[in-house]
Every structure is written in C-alpha cells, then in structure tokens.
Length: 487
Image (cartoon, rainbow, N blue to C red; front, side, top):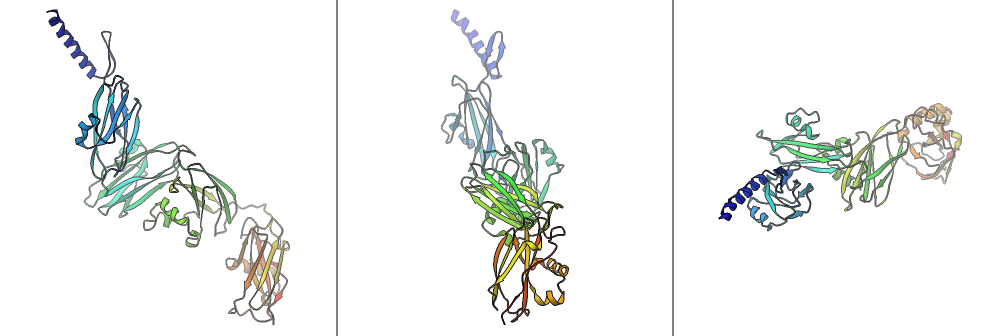
C-alpha cells in the first residue's frame, strides 16, 4: 500500500520535472537545479544562392555536441536515426558556420540539426527549409580582398532590369525603399560585375540586389554579407605594392607576393584611358579578373594608347611602366591582380599614381654634352652613334637636318631649328635614359632631299626630367658634323 501512495508522488515530480525542463535553461526551484535540454538553432547567412547556401549553427550551453546535415523534407527520420548521407558532427557547443555547395538551382532543401548533452541525451530536431535561387537570375561573389571586392550578376532575358548597392546590415530597409545613396541600376545587361576598390579592411558589408522581370515582378532580395580581410592579410593571395622612381615618361613599381600568391599582373593606364573597354556594357562589363587574365599575354599598349601591362610568375614583379603623353602631374590608374596557388586570378586592387610635378631646380641639358657621329654613308643609308655624358639629360629626340635648310633657308638660326623640332617632335626619333645608342638609318628614295651629293646633319634636342616642355628642353639643338651622300 505504501508503494501505491508513493508512486503517484513520484509520477507528479517526474511530470513537474518534465514541465520545468521543457521551459529550458537552468533554474533553482526549491533548491532543485533544473537543467534545460540541449538545442541548436539554424540561421542563414545571406541569401541562398543558385548552388550554395551558408548556415550558422548556434547551440545552447547545455549542448555537448550536435549533428547537422542537409536533405529533403522526407529525410527527417533518416537524420534522427543518423542514416542521412553527409551528416557531420561538431563536438563542442561553439557556434559554427558551414557552406553547402553543388546544390540544384530552384530546388527545396531542409537543413537539420540535433544537439546532445554530456550524457548523450538528444534534444529536439531543428529544421529549416529553403529554396535555392533560380538560375534565371544569379547574384554571386566575384572576389573579396582586404580593400576591394566585386559581385557578379547574371540573368536571362526575362529579367530586364535590376538594382544593387553596397552597404551595411543596417541599410536593408533603405535599399528596399530606394533610399540608399549607393544604389545603381542596370537594364538589358545580362552579365555584369560591380567592382569596389575603396573598401575598408576588416570591415563588415552587405551587397544587396533585386531584379525585376518584364511583368514587373521583383525577384527575392539577394543579400551577400561579407567581411573584408585585414589589411595585407596572408590568409589570401596577396602582395605588397611599392611605388618607385618616376618621371614624365616612366614609372617604376615593385610588387612582392605572399606565399599564397603565385602570379602577379600589373596594369597601368592614364586615368580612365580604357574605362570604356573595362567597364563598358558592350565590352568587358566589369569582369576584371577575366579581362586582365586575357590582357596579360598581349601588347595592350598597341591596342589602347596610354596603357601598359606586365606579369611575373613565382617571383617579385618589377615593373617599368611608361606613358605616351609625356606630361607632368598626369593622373594614372594602377591595377594589380593576384593569382592563387592554382594560377587562377583571385583578386584585383586599384591604386592611384601620377607623374611628378615640375622641378624648377632641374638643370637643363647642354648641346655640348653630346657626341654625334655618322659613318658608312651610302645611297641606301648610314649609321648613327649618339653619346652623352651629363646626368641632366633624361631623354632626347633626334632627326636628320637638311644642309640646305640649316645653311640656306634658316641660315643657322638655332631658335628656328629648335622650334621646328619641338613642333614636330612626335614624328622624330626617340631615346629615353640611354647615354649611348647606335642606329642604322635606311634612306627612303622617294624623299626628294636624298639625292647624290646632298648635305645633311643629325640634330639632337634633349630634355631633362621635366620632359618636353619649357623648362625641360635644352637651350640649343646638338648638331653633328655635316655629312654628304656619295656622288
């Protein structure tokens, strides 16, 4: 009989314990500690992509470990029994983030999680369903670095317009309400990459995007939260960029790769020179990784004036970029591309440089610094050797001067000769920073001046580090001794 009296009390206490336990957490109830059951919550990081999803698992403090997996709605029982394919276990109660890839576009999936306490007792199953994005409208990360990032938007003809912006988590409503200042729109553009080159390192951002089809229906809101890497981070293929000596024509750079960076490409242009090609809707459409990878093996300077490109593999990149404008204080865009261990382009960074300002203290070159000799003169051509000794000369133009013009037409008027060479310098011979050159000149018989017995000089007009401007030109043209074509 006593057992019959005691058992209902035991059952009541047990029921009370279950009731209290169901509330979760540790509580003091009449001196009895009630421990909550282990659970784990599922939070999506950003918007599920076409073929991937990123999830954060947050376990309670009662959790000793938890299992997690992805499957279909029908996989719940298999997950509970530990029979689901690809199930993983986290043996702690720490938050973790996991990404599943290679999912099917436009399909419904369920993420499952179940926590266990120290004694191996299981808590309830957590389940969160989602649908991967349609392949008709795709928003994805193109690259992320320490101070740059890009995002690629691809869509079918059904989605004719879309808007996007870079902001923070707090900017979501402003974006949806078209109140975010950084919002941009594109129409009838079915593959586009938006590049951001001025981001703060180690900073959290969110890339937002919404598309609209031709019926006026919006896509889901795409959110890509990301954190830029720490400045100069060695967690990614990265490099140290250093600017060296520069003048009106040449600019030097040293780019030192880190251990993960196996190849480097450096591209320079006068500011905006090829922007229409790089970011034009009918050209590369902002796909900078693909573009620079294609450009690295061609002479881009012959295609687009004012551009330069070079690369280095498994070594420090030393670049001597050149400009064709020959101007001071000329703004320049410099892009550096880092490649990963598979020699694939990983990120792009952009830098601003410029040619130097005018140096009023730079000494002018002197015509007497030059020695000019002409040998082996025939009716087919002749050899020219030009040498100079002074460090005041940075470069020079040179040309053949008709004896009739110098002796008779301008009667040795040095100012007139200098002015003519300045006026026509872009068509003259050019030498930069070389104190000695030899050149073979081939005579064009169609030029009427080249007749037997004709008299000529070689004229050299030098410039200092300021280039071909007033305050850069030498005061006089250096002239060779006269030479004559054979009779």
